[in-house]
Picture 1 (tube, helix red, strand yellow):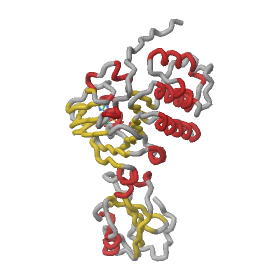
Picture 2 (picture 1 turned 180 degrees about the vertical axis):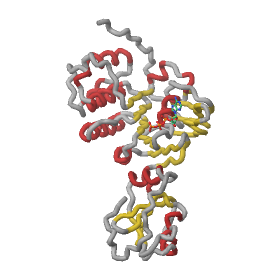
Picture 3 (picture 1 turned 120 degrees about the horizontal axis):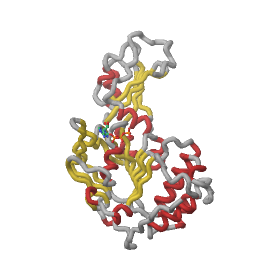
Picture 4 (picture 1 turned 180 degrees about the horizontal axis):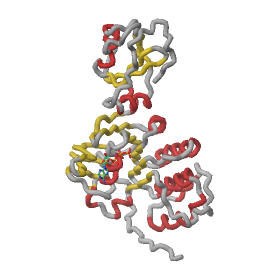
Length: 335
Ligand SMILES: Nc1ncnc2c1ncn2[C@@H]1O[C@H](COP(=O)(O)OP(=O)(O)OP(=O)(O)O)[C@@H](O)[C@H]1O
């Protein structure tokens, strides 16, 4: 079998420059349109260097479209996008060498041994750091002499991450990297991401639907919806915007589910749980005005907050509250 021809990137060894940039990613009115359908719509996004930035959004929000444009795989139909200070439509191989990308496919040449794949990558990237590779791959039970096809999906994900970090990228984009991994592999992957961000200055963009991963990793939460940016802050600040109110309604809720800011209503153990956005203590009074016997505030975690936020414009799971539930006979009917 002939060895694939390798093209060494003549990359000048230079200190990381992204730390001096105000933003590692900067888009201005970015638009990607397919006919009448917008995958990205007037997206103006500015991501500063350093830390782990989580990108979340429902299916079809435009996350992969954004990555394709940022990596120069696709041209936008409008607006501008810059990555590490470079225009995304004219990235050269030096620019690309500064960016790592790992997605859920973890595709590597199946017939090669891990050590051979690593050797190929080392030859391609002059900045390759074998210590970084070893420290990250050490989170996984990978034998260097194993063929890629013999590795589990989680182990392949680990090799991919280790290789991406060993290239010393200034920016690493991880697009649903843990899709299909079991809990053990997921944990190893997350620990490896945290270890690698501590060991390098790399900025990480982490896209996932798994909120427990976001909660564990992210310093910054970016929420996209229908191709637009709808929120950006720390996860804690996002959670501060969202609160849970639990109320007991002896009779009907009298339309309390349509009060301002209501994202989601659930009936759990005979009580109504309202997840609300940007509401203060007065919301309890509003519930009482609507007939609540009592109402109190509870805690809401990031998972629940983000899910309620993303589903707010979809059909609300309105409970059938026509029947009074004074004694709580309908308890335990969480929907
Ligand atoms: N080639 C295409 N032709 C037409 N529409 C497309 C094409 N590619 C993407 N889209 C549309 O663009 C929108 C954004 O898709 P995209 O894959 O970027 O979303 P996403 O946020 O990555 O979703 P997911 O979380 O499901 O991966 C979707 O509505 C999708 O149908």
